Structures are given as C-alpha cells and as structure tokens.
Image 1 (spheres, one colour):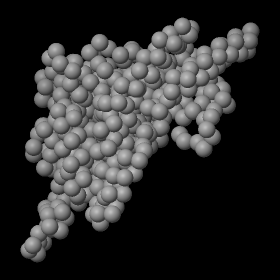
Image 2 (cartoon, rainbow, N blue to C red):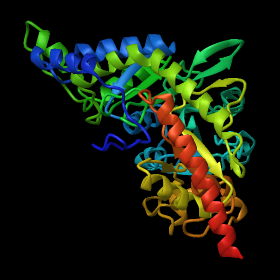
Image 3 (cartoon, rainbow, N blue to C red):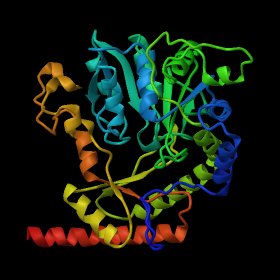
Image 4 (cartoon, rainbow, N blue to C red):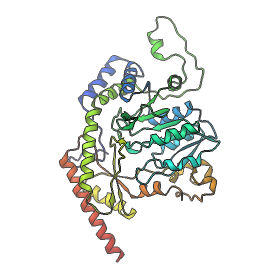
Length: 414
C-alpha cells in the first residue's frame, strides 16, 4: 500500500532504487525485452543462491504452481493435499489442473500445515502434497517429506513468500528452494521481499521437469525464439504439446538480478525489525506473537500478531489507519470464498469430508485454526526502509489501540 502522504506508514514497500532503474534501462535500450539472456542469467543466479540444480523463471508464482502440479502428474479428478489458509492462488493452481484441493488445518502455534493431520486424508486419489511456507515461515519439511515418500507422493513447496528463509537440515542451514521436496515455487510480486514487478520462479533438481517447464511456459514451442533469432539458417518451430504464455521478460529479470544482490542486506534488516517487534510487543496482554521454531529462520516477509478477540481486529486496524498506519488482516481462507464453490462440496474437500464433516458455506468445523487466524490476526508494517523510529510509532500506536479497544469492549459489555 503506497501513499503520497509522507507521514503514511505502509504495511509493505518494495526496495527499488537507481540500480533497478539502470538495469531496466539497459535492457530496454538493448532492443531485446522479452524472455532472453537476462532471464537465463537470473535463473542461474537464483539457482545458485538457493542451492538448486535448476531454476525456471515464469510470469508468477501461480503459474509456477500450475506447472509444478502438471509436472508431477496431477490431472482431472485427482486430490492434492494443502491448506486453506493461504492466498487463493494456492487452491486455484490445483483447480487449474481440474483437480480437487483437500484442505487440512494449520497448526495453532506455527500457523503452517498441521503435519499430524496429513496422513488421515491420503487415499487412492491423492497425487501430491502442496505445502505452504506461510508469510515466509518455513513449514516442517523434516516431517512432511518422509511421510510423503512413504506413500510415494511428490511434495511441492509454495514458497511464494519464502525467498531467503532457511531450514536446519542435517545440521546445516539450507535455503528454502534447495529443494528439499520435489519442486519449490516463488513469487516476485511487490508484496514479497524480492520483486520484479511480478513474476515467479520454479526450482527443482529434476532435469526432465525443468525441460518440461521451459517447454510449457512458451506455448509448448519446440525451439525458443532466442535460438531462432541467433540462427544463421531458417528455423521452423513446432508445437508438440499444449503450452501457456507463462514467460518472464528480460526487463523483469534484470530487475530481479539487482534485487537478488540486495537480498542479504534486506534479510538482515527484516530480521532485526522482527526481533524488535517481538521484544517490544511482548508486554501487551491478550495478543500472541509469531513463533519461529528452532529449526527455522524466517525472512519475515510479514509480521502477524494474533489478537485475543475477533471483535478487536477491524477496530484496531481502523484505529491504526486513522493514524496513517496501514495493516492487513490475517491470511485469507480459500474455503470461505465463492470462487472455491463454497456451496458446492465437490469443489474442495476438508480433512473430515469422508467422515461426514458438515461444512457450511463459509465455515468448516475441521478448519478452525485457519478460520481463527484469519479473524484474529493483524499484520503490522515491516519493510526494508523502515527506521527504528518509524517502527516505534507503530509499536506505541498499536499498544494504545489495543488498550483503548479493550476498554471500549468492557464498557460495552457492562
């Protein structure tokens, strides 16, 4: 959220400056602005950063998830286990394959998929597990991957928010995207830590899947236009499979390369700010701060605070907005949206579906933690350019708003 008011504190703000502008200018003046050498360089640099054998740039994380699901063989009528509490793109990518999202609840402490509930929904229709590193906090891959392997299921990581996040793996800190599962998918939307305006990346160690991604992202064209362009002989392409227009441009990739250079500095600053929030908000009663397991290092793409009452959420958010401080509510639940066919049970499943769960439109008895977090969380401002003095304004204002809202609720109830 951006405002021209200099006193306005946005919830997020991309860190873009002259270096990205010059990179974009260089590409624009080169005459080649579509997918080309800059994309190739960005892919190589990204793969090296996360520790993956392959990285394929695409137009968004949504398209990355779609191609990842297709690569592992998800097709019409299949079921994919995931969470409802995620941006709707997670569920939509499954539906693009004409498959069915099977939602399990999130853990009340980590806010990521509850691993203990996965096995109960695995059946003959299950084709994959799509786990989400919610707002940059790594989910428990150490538990998810062995379970998936025991059933022969591929694991796709929705790492949209998790560039730079790390997980402790065999005694070493590994980047999310290595990949520890089969495929990881990232977003470069302006809300994310690294941005290219929009865009996505798919990482894998499977060379055949990587070749498939590259074929699909460019309409299924057998010969990339870069090859045709540089060839001294006439070349005719063919289209052996149906593909998609899921390409990234060289302008975006040039910006992404500059952003990747800044990432270590951005991570250090965001972790510092998150630590300050945790230390200075801990005294406030009736709120719960985010939990980072000992085996995880978040990039702190967002800092969500859980309130004790859902009645406080909108009130506190509006009070902060009146003071020129932007916030966001807790991460949405896809099963509550009409786009997921909340009146049509066959559009999605919950973990209790086959046991006769009575899911009402917009509510599901088996997804209580997911719904609770959407209704009780407030995401506070956090971005690289945020100074400690600006953060102190947010902290002090949030503290006052919470106290004032509590007094108002008590007065109303009495």
